[in-house]
Length: 59
Image 1 (spheres, rainbow, N blue to C red):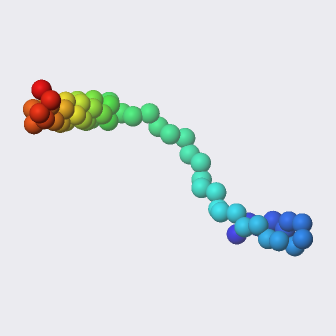
Image 2 (cartoon, one colour; image 1 turned 120 degrees about the horizontal axis):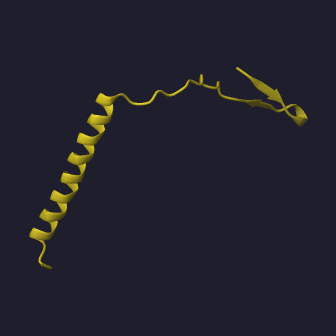
Image 3 (cartoon, rainbow, N blue to C red; image 1 turned 30 degrees about the horizontal axis):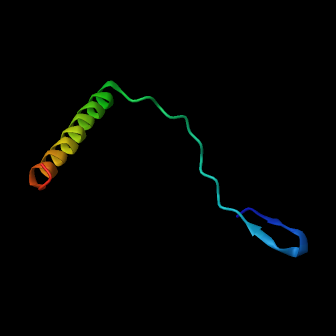
């Protein structure tokens, strides 16, 4: 493990750094899945808002 000696004899221990790699752009299938998941999330949020307004006594 890498460590340094500081003033006064104190040891400072550092964590091991992870390996760095180049990220790859998403494929067409992944992009399509992202769109479907976004639409599903939007429908879920809209549905929750409709249910909240329908059960509240404000409307």
